[in-house]
Amino acid sequence: MLRGCDSEMPIEISITRFQPEYARLVNEVYERECGASGDEFDVLSNFVAARIDMKYVGIVRLTPGPDGPLQKWSIGPCPLPEGPNIIQMTRGVVRSTARGRGLYRLMMLRAMAFAFENAYLRAVAIIAPDFRQRQFLFDIGFAECAPQSMYRWFPNVEGPARNIICDLEKSHLKWGDAPLQRNPVAFATSEL
Image (cartoon, rainbow, N blue to C red):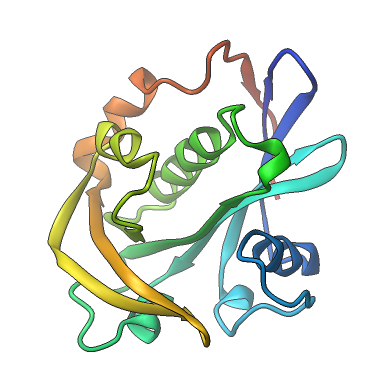
């Protein structure tokens, strides 16, 4: 687990299995009806979870290949590679009341380290065309690998997305240089 501190409260970042609170958090961020069940990929995945004051405020889902959610969500052929050595990073959300503290960056750095430590060769994801953290993702090794594609990530939510990929072996040395937050303080402890 990683713990980061900002001027307000300690932030706890850990790797976990699916918790019903994660589905509720995703539904809240996407302003969907609240429910405790996610989709069929949740039980196959690990999650990087962020908590503040013992409440979940952010997650990133890590689904091993092959046959992950991005292939299912793609409207038409999915341009992203898939396979047993590829991990899909999806459902990266932060509750609106917890934004501006570097949580997404902390969670993505932990997700990248988890993927590298577990011998995945590449990480793939999709991002909105105007995603605010796009440059951060490029700084830690992601690159666009195909033209924008259409995805449907909920039955009533679809749109264009940029397809991005990261070669973990080539990029892992960049992660120590990535800016985490304005005043990062973090230390590692045990997980799972």
